[in-house]
Figure: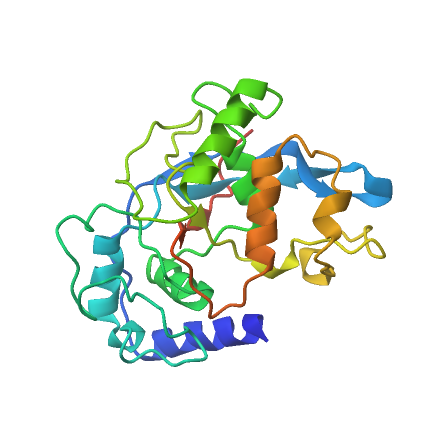
Length: 262
C-alpha cells in the first residue's frame, strides 16, 4: 500500500511540473560488504552486499524543508492530506510556511515517511534502504566499520539517549570515514523499508526486502545484541506507519552511483 502511494506521489509531482530543488552535497559511497545486525538463516548474521551510491552528507534541515514546502504547498501542514501525514506534522514550526532563525540549521523533524520521500524525489533522490543506512552508519571518523569497538558502541548509545526528546542540535557534526555527518547523535532517520525491519522467527531466509515478514519480538532473536543502540532504532522504526511523525525523527536522501568502485 505504502509503495503504491509513493509511486502515485511521484507521478503527481511529475505531472505538476515540480522542478528539483538545489541539492545539498552528495558523497560517493563505494560498494562493499558487511554483516547486518538483522539476522539471516539460523540466527546467523546476514552478509550484505551494498551497491555504490551517493548519500547526502547531512540530514535535511528545517530551512531546506521549508524551501520544499514553499515550492510544493500541498506539503504545508495546513494542506497536507491526512493519509500522508498525521496531525502533529511540522507542528513545531511557528507557522505553516515559516521557521525561526534558530531552527534554520537544525535537522527537520516531525515529518512523515511520505513527506520525506517527496522531498527526496525533489532532489532526484530517494530515502536510503536500511542496509544502505546501516552500512554507512557503521563508520567512525577513521574506520568504515567501527562496530566491534566497545568505546564507539558506548558513545553511540549515549548519543541515542540524548535524541529521545527535546530540540535537535545544529547540523554539522564530525564527518565519518566516508565524509557523512550526523548519522548518530542528532536525530534518528527514516529509511525506505522502515516497516520491513522486524524479522519473524518463521521467516528468516528472505533475500528480498519486499518479502520480509515483521514481528515485534523479532529484535530479541538478533545475534549482535552488543549493538543495542542500532536495535533500538530498528524497534522504533518498525513501530511506525508511513504517516506518523515523531519529535526525534528526520531523514536524508541517497542517489544511485553505479560508477563508484569498492
